Image (cartoon, rainbow, N blue to C red; front, side, top):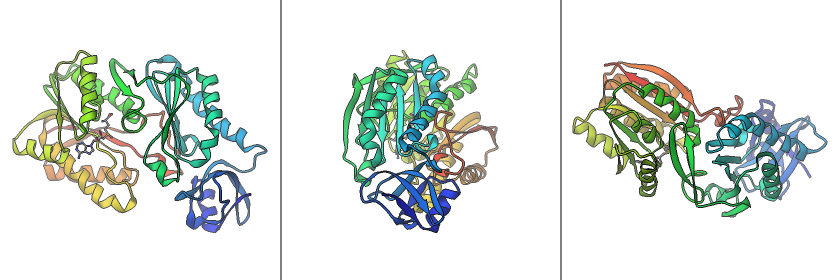
Length: 389
Ligand SMILES: C[S@@+](CC[C@H](N)C(=O)[O-])C[C@H]1O[C@@H](n2cnc3c(N)ncnc32)[C@H](O)[C@@H]1O
């Protein structure tokens, strides 16, 4: 059995994208699995196939191979080998071990929290391979436990069952993870994503270097989730407020503050749009504001609306920053390109009548690698801005 693509599908793979949609496919096996993928001129590579998915083919190997499984596991080996140093150096840390397409392991995410691995496989062909995946992870990394956290709504769209299952070892309800000098709790069975937003790990650590010794008085962490930016901020800023619309996330943020012995944090459950508008009306001033909203553009069609929402929160935040203060602002929507994000920030600075200096232009951490020819893998944009006047 094999996949046959039309010239449109083949052109995508020749340009080294990994995905083929229904309109690129001529012939497809009717059961999910791993199959050779042919174009009009012969074999193009091997892919994970799911006829029920919008993305019907996800390539993990270009060209011929005698054994596609060996090729697939070689990609896992490569993903683990470049993180091995960090994994071993920081046994209590959080780290992304496998970043799906960015590691040529389409649809597969594996995060490590103090050596408890959380697996999320969103491509059907992984399902029968989970046992072998767990064995390989165990022999390579000796983790404390491995959890398949397969209850994300996105699995339903792929025709996959939703469940959680311990694949190896022991998975407690939660673990404490270290990030620099901060410690935070991750609920392994609950919470958004695999439990925490590791893509901002390096950026949270970087922010501390901008805060140290500055004597800043007031900080605001908007869209704070379990308060991770706020915890790093509270080590250097006199008073920090963490804002999120999720009460359970803020409850964990409160516990995290206690875990770190930080008493200068407060927590507000609110819609960020309303809160920023109210604070602006009340003429409040902050030295540091962090904006880390969810992906406002889940689909391409949402792009314009998302840019308007990003502009609104950034404009309000810029108006709230005291001269000499910092705005750390990000977008995790891959449908919003980097150039559009910076154009939006430029327009917000102009409309706020502020002189804003771009100090850092960053993205996701190095454990979330980007494939240049798969723009979807480059999703996080983060700007660290200094508001001069
Ligand atoms: C990308 S996460 C933030 C991650 C966090 N900064 C970190 O470093 O772990 C986005 C957060 O925004 C929250 N959120 C979504 N819509 C919101 C809204 N309108 N107002 C406030 N919070 C919102 C979600 O509950 C989620 O916790």
